[in-house]
Image (cartoon, rainbow, N blue to C red; front, top):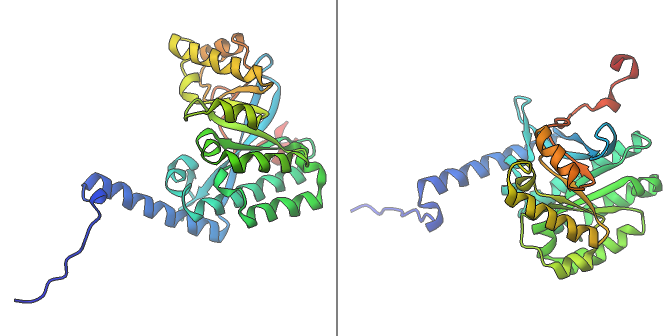
Amino acid sequence: MPNRIALEIPDELSNPLNYAVHQRGRDILDTVRAALKHGEVRLAYQPIVEAQRPDRIGFYEGLFRVLDADGRVIPARDFMPFAEDCDIGRDIDCSALEIGLTALSQVPGLRLSVNMSARSIGYPRWMQVLERKLADDPDIGARLILEITETSAMTVPELVQPFMRKLRAHGVAFALDDFGAGATSFRYLRDLRFDMVKIDQQFCRNAHRNRDDQALIRAMSLIADQFDMMTIAEGVENAGAANWLRDAGLHCLQGYHFSLPQLRPDWTTPARQRA
């Protein structure tokens, strides 16, 4: 009887659905690697507006995007769940930072937030990118905001605190992203002292008609106010939510109700074309 080679499939992949998700993750990471290698990555810029004066932009968030082989734009939500825990996640953070710092150096007066994972703290290339740009233009630091997700920050708070202290010496500000989505330790929230918290969109999207969400937003806003942190509502998609969040005292709002993320924001368009 001929020998047969048995292929061992991990138990977690024996389910067809799990295997399909795993394979999709591998495929999309291959796309991201190719895009990084060939420079086919961008930031899409979305304004964060003042709640009381939504015609005033406080700052922009630079959202990482990948262009596939057909030129289609792939948003971070499609690949970051697969990438964040891998080395490629560090490469994404480096690329996002480099693009964001270049925009800050080219656009006087621009204030910009860039996302990063706490896993990139201590990653030599990431810090080299920042230090090189700060050496060229020290004023950039005061216009840079680094967003760290709640889940990521609370995983390694012992690394986050000295990291924040070091960069604050250069004027860099910090935002706790997706506040309320993870398991916040209030002791760490007190000790880390973020400059701003971005309340997760799951609470804000229907805030005007969900009393449970309203109670949670008020509680998170009260905590932020106690620690002198600016509050920003994410995922604001309609006027009803925007009005309720404004009346609830949040400082800034972000979402499709105000603007979609733009690969070519206003500042890249000559004034003559905008007129």
